[in-house]
Image (cartoon, helix red, strand yellow):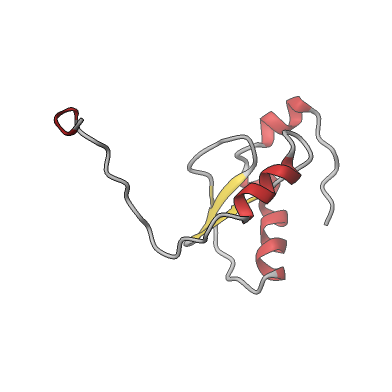
Length: 93
């Protein structure tokens, strides 16, 4: 499914909209034989990003150099469990 080019205003209006992006997210999950779940949009960034159960789905588009961004993210090691990074306290510095 190819996403039609969106204007900057339309992209901004739909960025965190699960109803708009839901069909695209569902197709990605099914293509990779992953379970589907109701979508949540707990954060809004540069690209549409959603939680589907325990999975994070990020849709990279042409805007903001999505191809390069996808390359960077896909080269990172996958995390299979949550990890907290402690924040140094002033006394530790």
